[in-house]
Length: 498
Image (cartoon, rainbow, N blue to C red; front, side, top):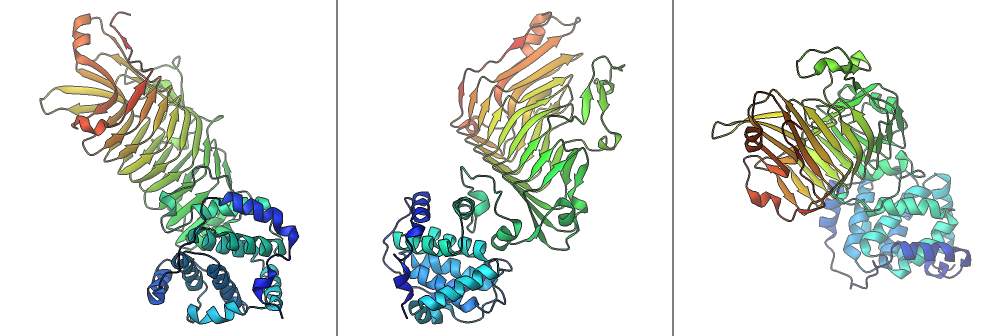
């Protein structure tokens, strides 16, 4: 019987897939010499970071499956990286043997056994899982040509098409021990992968809908490709899981999302408020002079008790898009977490005494803020400074203990309209406390505005007590502004009487 090595070259129909996979993983090729491996250490590492409840668990063909992965590793250069992934697979499927003992079996794998194994994988509906397992091994090893050729032929036998492989490869690129902090820069929405496919690798229980996820008595739950529409509020603290991961989900005209006690992650999700406002600004509505609060009408009374649209104590947003939010309600509060590679576009806040964004203990990087506008009447944040000068400060974003790195602000503004004020006044786009830092951020066509009017004070007095700036440093040092660049920046100040 032919050995497995003779399989290569026999399947001409796999050439298209081979070319495609080779192109997608181009640049990863390596010819590193085989390293001396510490299998005991690799096994321990695999057990610590195992692929959670791998569906290979309990399958009668498990040993042959793992042996084929060992053969795949033998074709590449970076053996340690390959074995590291394989031990995570083995730990996840509860394999109790010594993996290296399967090496001889792997090298004598016959074509007949291979055919039987492929039929078993296909019948058990594990073709998608096999693809991601094998792509992960190949990706971490450097995707040598011999590995890619072998995989292309096996994928053809498993009837895996290019569309699925596209998504699987994008997923694999972000899937390592710290995948959340290293997202693929151009990852596509996952429409073919299922939560069941993904749950194995990021440790969680898949759910097909928000309702199903809310009632799962599991520590970690994963929701993929789900949509939330309507004005209802998502109170995630009422859900049974402790960790909630939303992948490629859509939130349309949502009444709010809140969590104080859960760990929440959003990856490749979209948020759109085009047709819903929680609190409407109505200048014709009968009002009292108490900060214009009665000029706002609530769309639904149940929203009154929720200050922000989105409020989280521990959350991450990666590759997310936020669009078309126009409301008289603060947009986001984040107590601790990560915001990476996200886009905020057309986020506008109508007159309210509050900031649009408030972040704390957060890392914000590679994000783009486009046409975000904050419009404040009367006052925003109030500080009493060390020299006993009372100061009223307005800002679009207030940041405490947060790192801002390589973010872009385009066509953004902070509008501060003052009435009956006689203290020091400032207006900023981004206000940093002494523990925050802003590095390599750019500001293009950005405006900070103070509009001041009061008949009892002179024009000169208002000019002396007002300040506008793109970045404000509250009790902070100027070196927190390292690398920030500005272009086409306008700091407009409407003088009293205009």
